[in-house]
Amino acid sequence: MLPSIELQLINKKVKPTAMRLLVLEILYKDRNAVSLSDLVSKFERAEKSTLFRTLKTFEEKKIIHRIDDGTGSVKYALCADDCDDMHEDEHIHFVCTVCKNTICLNNIKIPSINLPNNFKLNDLQIIAKGICDKCNS
Image 1 (cartoon, rainbow, N blue to C red):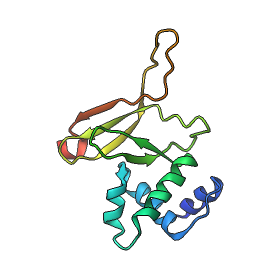
Image 2 (image 1 turned 90 degrees about the vertical axis):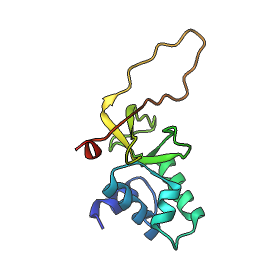
Image 3 (image 1 turned 30 degrees about the horizontal axis):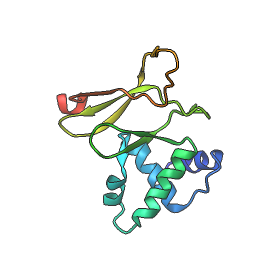
C-alpha cells in the first residue's frame, strides 16, 4: 500500500480504516473515475453500503469529487492535492467511447461562464467524449 495514502486520510481528519485505505489505493492506482458498482465488483466481500459511505466520506472531506458523465452512473475521482473548502474541480472530464473510462483532464480548465443577472450557478461540468490515448494507440 502507498505510504502517503494513510497520511492523506489522517491529514483530512478521516480515520484510516482498512476499507478506506483499499478504496483510496484503487483510486490512486487506476487514475480513472470509478462508480460504486465498479468498487462493488472489485470488493466482492464488502458491503455495498460500506463502500457507499466510504465514497460519501471522501467526498465530504474533499478527497474525491463526483462526476456525472452522462453514463447514468455517478463516478468519483481524486481531487487535486490543493482542493480546499470551495471543492472546485474546474477541469474537463473525458469519457472514452471505446473503453468507457472517465478521465480527469486536470490541465484543461473549464472557462468562466458569464450568466445573466439573477442567475446563480451551482455546478458546471464539461464532458468531452472520444477515444482515449490508450484506445487510440
